[in-house]
Amino acid sequence: MDPNDLVLQYLDEAHATETALVTNLRAHIAMTTDAQYERLLKRHLSETQDQVAAIKVRRGELGEKDGRSLVAGAFGMAMDVAGQILVLTKGPLDAVRTTSQQERMLKNARDEAATEALEIALYDALEAAATAAGDSRTAKLAVDHRKQEEKMLGDLRKQIARLAVATFEDKTDTKAAATASTSRSSSGRSRSTSSSSSSSRRKAAGAKTSGSSSRTSASRSRSSS
View 1: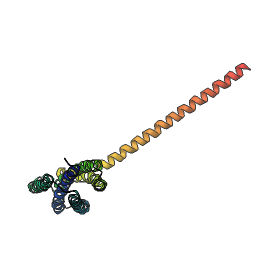
View 2 (view 1 turned 90 degrees about the vertical axis):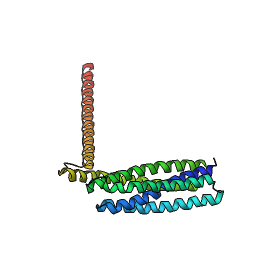
View 3 (view 1 turned 60 degrees about the vertical axis):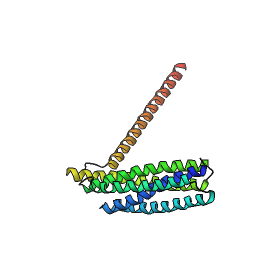
View 4 (view 1 turned 180 degrees about the vertical axis):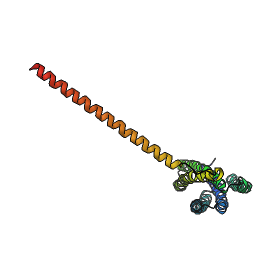
């Protein structure tokens, strides 16, 4: 297989995934009633649209430069069609997967997080293949896109924790006793306090040992004299 065709194949996979995500993000934005979550989705929609455009340009550059085999071209078209079919079959399910609006947003956010993890892996593979082929421009594209996906995944995880609490309160009619971030902070402070206490005890024990040694040495000196 020509190295250029393999790089193009991975670009095709990334293009199909990003194109499908554009459609999903638009659908999820239309469904959300949470302003904070909506802002995050809109930000990433813009990023994803730019990524689709950048990948399309790079695919064209590689095809024009080295010539693209019919097999690689057919694969790219198949990937894009498969991505759109997945969106069309999944879209209606998103709207009826639960009667709770809070839970619907939570499940959408979980799906988006899974997609981000997939995209990170795709760009890992694309960077490695492009680097092996000596294609530094495609490798840089993969690195730049992956940074955006990693940031989005981190931001989504924060939203998931918040939306899960909102879902808990919505479905149980119970006020949350604490949030996950509060629990983690308390746990961190507890470990820090415990560590400080242990350090203080060790220092005190060391001081006692030092004092005892000094007294022993002084006693020996008096005995010798």
